[in-house]
Length: 310
Ligand SMILES: C[S@@+](CC[C@H](N)C(=O)[O-])C[C@H]1O[C@@H](n2cnc3c(N)ncnc32)[C@H](O)[C@@H]1O
Ligand SMILES: [Zn+2]
Figure 1 (tube, protein in one colour):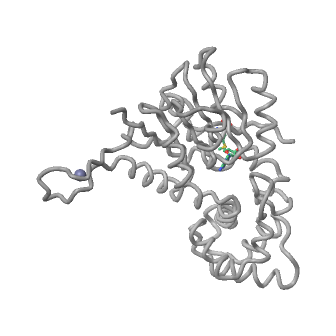
Figure 2: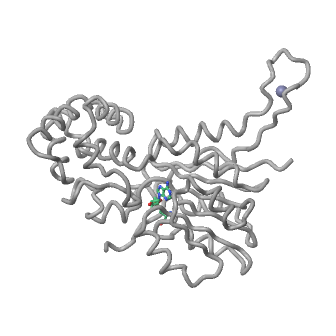
Figure 3: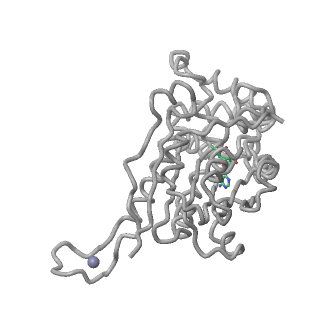
């Protein structure tokens, strides 16, 4: 297996944003290789607790090996969308801080067999959980208009029509089963003049990965469950990796900060609604040094919200 050498982005900023209660409960929704989790553990007392989620069985094996002997840690092989149900099954009514470092890990990208990379040949898989419908099943079965829509929406790929048409043409000859088969097909479909800005398959691979893993579709509901799992005064910090993801985090957080919804000409408030959360700071991005050292930090954005204590 590829080494789990994930370099977390916005590391200190994220740990600070969590405002960790040493005796309290912290949840790492995307524990991966455990980089952020290890930093959380350094701040916990003997009484503190850390719940580590990941949907990837490879990450779970790494987390168990790394933290299994620490009595403060519970490793949970679940989608973070089930945070409320999992906490309830652990008899934890609410927690002090929650972290989500979205997207794929460097391990998932670097481990060729997972099929996320357009640089290395492997079965076209891309399933973080290793269950459900793979990228190969999507490209070989979806109607052309559905493929086009995914490439437009999740890849912001302006050549979506050409690429979708090329996929459908190719699969009539033979199924598209490997990463390089797809990468080469996309490159060939790309207009020569547009080939300068990075690998032509980058956006297509991003779009398929998002669709395969339901990354955007499930995010608003998952963020609501995370926020509702916080104690009053608790913090939720989320790192996103592209503008589509960040827009969801921003809008969902904004919905928690809305208070009174009475018409402006009402003399007094009759709805009684109060904001549930307050934003902790303006979104943070990587500084110059981190940008130079870690490719993944380029589009990373950290947002944090605190549940208001009334
Ligand atoms: C960017 S990595 C996190 C790396 C981690 N912060 C570290 O320091 O090593 C994202 C991780 O979240 C996991 N993940 C993504 N979506 C998930 C979901 N819906 N539920 C649970 N885990 C998820 C992925 O499998 C991956 O391991
Ligand atoms: Zn009102």
